[in-house]
Amino acid sequence: MKKFQFFDQNIRQQRPELNFCTFNYIFAEYICYLKRKHGNDYNEMNSKMEQLGVSVGIRLYELVSLRERNKSETKLVEQLRFIQGIFWKHLFGRQAESIERLKDRPNDYLIRDENPLLLKYISEEGHISPAQFMCGILKGVLNASGFTCQVSYQFKTDERGVSYYPHTVFILSFEDARDL
Image (cartoon, rainbow, N blue to C red; front, side, top):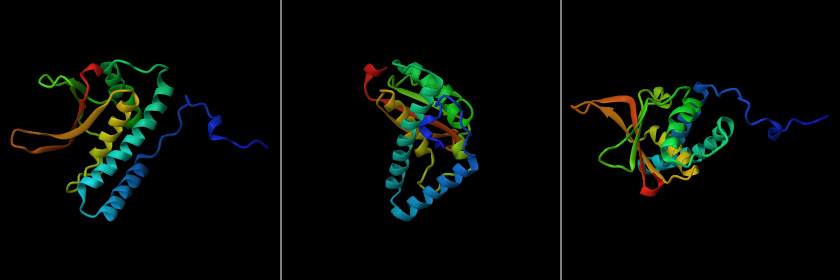
């Protein structure tokens, strides 16, 4: 009798997706765990969420790269298009709205998402933001592909400062101009 081995599976085959409600429950429990462990140290909680996101991003990048294409992109713009299209669709079921380069800061790019799936059911509570996890995922993907960057986020606001939560803009700041 042959035992079924995980490594015997074809990596290019699509596996059933994780139920999003299940993911949200697990993620909400992780946030509760961080609150119990770190109390009111919001910087530490957001740092831990970003670290988890980086770890997830690296692994997802490897998986999606193997499933969807055979070569690694060496140009930043092509890598960003891959993230906006194929990677975002794999992760959230649809593409991100746009990628833009900031005119006043040539090393910075924006990825816009009108309604991030991760933020749809989990709101920002106090100074704890689930968007920090998404920043970590983006940072992990870009670092794994050879582009060093810092990732932050902002929620879209109008001229009066009213937030359009969850409309999110992820800001990718690349450290080295030669990467671009």
